[in-house]
Image (tube, rainbow, N blue to C red; front, side, top):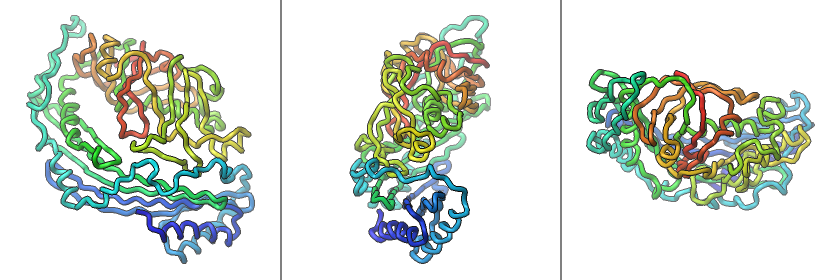
Length: 468
């Protein structure tokens, strides 16, 4: 946890900065304690315990601005560090747009870090033996077998132009290797500035990840991975990880090529943030100011389908990745980013607000949520609604042009017909434009993974260009 003397030392940084000649300052203490147990093929491979602790200082000196960080947190070292930092800042070019946020905008209710209920006291009582047990007891070799997986859906009859050897049965494989990692952590962030801001954030996290490789009867290898995480120990389910990773690997057996063309695309919730990220980046004021955004003139306009809502919801108690303030200490709020297809705001921090001459908002989307749209709650519901298409379960590279929104992504996934998976597909590309893609949104489910910072559900789009 954060000790009283650590808070005192952080506040002392402000006094040191003013004494050294700064007109204003902000200090942020970050403290992260993490324990890791890594496994290899069902045995403990490495145990790690680490503590990262540092103070970041933002200095406003004679109309100039500098940001500095140190992990030497004794008073003498900090004083010497800040004096040198102030001297360095004086050598920088003037930057009159830099300033602290107005005190009225900063959080007043983030007092002790417990407000969101995501810092679990149980974290402090976990023993090394329990951590090892979490890692070993949830390995694939101890929790899975071919019998634990559901029978694979046999492919429908293909046309002669798509005829291929049918996939092998699901039990016709063997496990080659498995890497796993259990970790738990406690994170604290304490922010103060010379205008009276004082905010505190605390959270714990429990995570388990595994990646495994299987081999089919022809010697071809396939990999699968999965992870589970939760801020509270009572909500942590590591037992789900190995079966999900194994199923992901086994389901890839027997991939086929699909003909190039336009298909309905269903993007799994695990990877659907890939098509949300370009939108969030384009709404950032820095990218708009740099003329590197395809949404420069989008504020107040309907550029997405009617009925589509995208919200920022960082203040949901008990859920991972919540935050009551941003890095400037500005208070967050649950609010619309896009409402009924209309862009409601840009992400504008204090600096960009002064630079662009607009009102500040928040520096970024803290916890964006795509709300349910169209028919279907789960991935299976949406596939059934779509009928035929390609289910995308992974993006394997590619890029998006932030200025135009044009994209090209390599994907892998599954061909589905009549709402059912018929075979895996690999080595395909989807290409297009982000705004054009979202204009053809068919559905957004209600199956976002709550352990993620971005709550993106399964998404479905019509007439997507696939090439293979």
